[in-house]
Length: 67
Image (cartoon, rainbow, N blue to C red; front, side, top):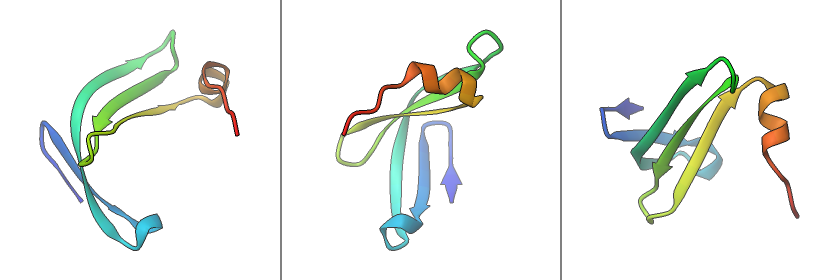
């Protein structure tokens, strides 16, 4: 919905359309050797999140999934 140099404001349709604000902590720009970019943000509750965007062949080997 909105963004400036330090914050993002998003509408979360998975949460009833609630507006959520995130503080931008760090951006790891796209690099061809990593084949991805990553953004670290902090939500209003103080929890940190890392969002990665890139080729599946690059991202999937870097993550683990546990139930």
